[in-house]
Image 1 (cartoon, rainbow, N blue to C red):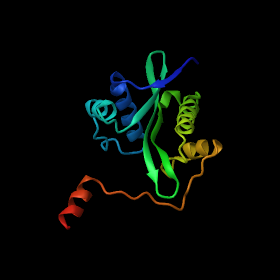
Image 2: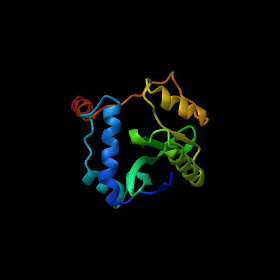
Image 3: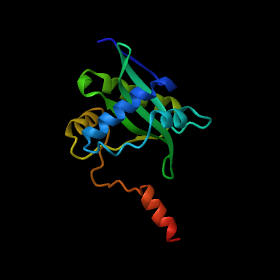
Length: 159
């Protein structure tokens, strides 16, 4: 299979959004995606980009993405967060996931970060096995904690 891993451009965002929605459906949250192609364009390609995205292109179609952004660890220093690594259902097992993860890890190495972080849903055993095979540690004793937009508003209202 012939593919290209490259930096995403603004015009890729509709296809990127399609893959984000495919992941949301896979994770049983089909209505959870609030971003739009326009907000991805604005957030990723504006004056202060909030993220960087690599795309895997096969026959002029984006079949995979890796969306990353910089973070900082009070213990380690600069780290990179992999928000999503998505390969279209039809292309899973083709090597695109490995190629995208390779690109992210090489990028992290070039940046000199101390760690790459990401989450994986606990029932996605194929993804967990894939990451562990690549040498990643899956910390099953940590829980993800977050406040959504309503939670933030309620929290601030109580201040």
